Length: 255
Length: 232
Image 1: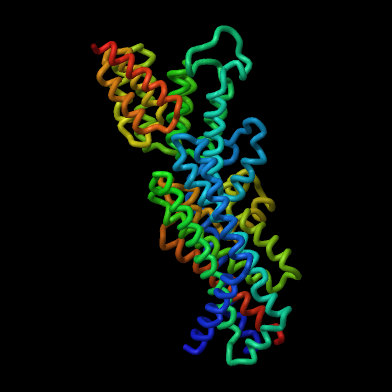
Image 2: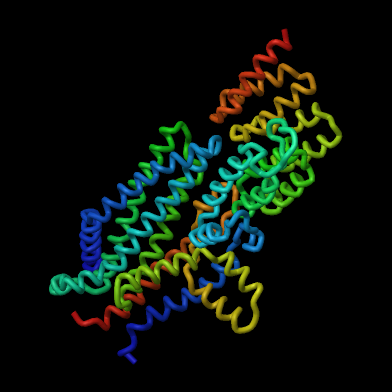
């Protein structure tokens, strides 16, 4: 219980920190402007304006949240180590698992807040144009958040062993692309053989499959790629595993 | 041994990752065409690669649909064809089919794009064979789409030069709220040709209420005025 309370407090502090961050406001303003700009693209599509408006807005929301979350995750712990703030935290009865859980929780909550604000902006734009959002809209936003949870967890772990924020962000970017490339990777594996096929398969298996959560791209007509239970378990594994790896690395660090 | 006990949980997590990887990759369905189905159209390779890398197939298909409409909306002279000016919607437009295929290879569930492109090919550009091949390709990934099947039947009947039958066949399509305006325009035209002026008027009125495309609005007003004169 004590660990949970510590994690909750650190998570709340981390969320406030993110919320007060200038970048956070900048990203939201920028996203708002971009979503508004999607109106222009929508008008060009004439009778497909509703679809264009929805797709552009969802894509921009995802990119904005991704950019902010990856940057925040890459610097969340390393910045506290550099500024020595972490010593103050550990001078109190705060365990390392609680600290890590709190930091991750704060990032997840900040992403949810950012997505929520942008979704409200986007929805008001859709309604103001006289349209209704497609039936998969909320699912698409929720699944964007799921993808962000996975990539933030991985980035937090990567930031503990990389030498700079830039390298952590780069690795996260590569994983994001590979994770969306699964059906293409499947095609490549089917066309290759021997060691190349083995290496490609191993790489594909150990990359988070973001395409499973790409409800934004699947729309309403495409069949779901996997059962909801499997998706939940997969998400949990990709959140828990980086946390446990981070914990193992964190144990070795001297504070 | 106790010294390494803290590695037990990460090892379990690594096993969970290794176990969940193959089913997530192999068993999960990937309901999109493989990349070799996406043929390059007008230096589209880098844009397509970006779309696939970021999971933006749907958005890329939207952009290509706008390009298709701009291409088809441009005067036919711009695509190099010569001779007398063709009727509205006519002309050569050699890239029409490749662009339409490109859209459906990116997002095979973009039904309105499939309907718009096949109907234009079949009824405006007089290339029904290409329309049928496009619809058959679309049906590969979206076999339950009844609107494709209906349009296929309508194209089949159009070869028999029976406008009344084609108009009846596409009637369920135009009752759909998000039916492409171009199909509504076609249905109105076919009804007019078959002498069903009342049905044609109703469809032109629906066009006025549903589309934001100024061209179709102007055309519907003009046709309605003409039909009123014919019905008197």
